[in-house]
Image (tube, rainbow, N blue to C red):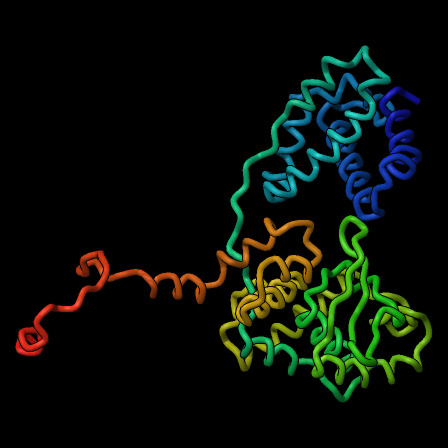
Length: 329
């Protein structure tokens, strides 16, 4: 086993769990990055996997790998930066233990992230939400499950990972109905439910109690639905809803779009951005500020407050002679 392989094993078996206490999603993302990187270096350098060591992890090779992600795999600049973070995290941990490779590692750590442009947030209008919720076939068990899932998600704004990890005990439908979940950074939060969502969830959970397992939204054998399964089901219902709501045609709607929709509904109702950040589980309001840019109602209200270009600025002062003023009307 070479030094790079030993460093990777130390990072993923000890450091990531015991010292950093990284989440399973983060560890999985970092692991996949290094798997892709080692496969890329093996193919590019024409050497065996066991021969890939710190000498191969140069700034030039890492830059080539990042370009490969964008140009050949079609990854976005944001994904590119996430992969770079995974590489730098492992190398930062390895640097003190391998000073003989300090020059190579330092050059990789100096690679800057690529600047990205934040796209305009896409969300569903109220009419599109109604069409989407009407798409599942309520005469089937799967349709009733999916209807409850979509109704709950579009109202609470839970992330897809949070929806997948929900269990039956996470929902409370008594006085002060709410859903409890653990989001990014292991931050736990409680999201209230509306009366309409409570009604849907009450009916669904009564039927869910006859199925095995504890997952709130489960498959035929009681197992949790995967992320891919949720996205596939949503795409099917979007195609159905687009028949009656043509505005959905051409929209790229994912489970995260439903999260955006929940946030935009709160913003349209006049809820403060700080409260929306708490609702969505954001660490601060910087992520939530994007919804302000997407809300044309707020921008239109700001425009309505501006003066026309032909109006002279200044405070209004009435004419001293009321008779002259009336004559001039």
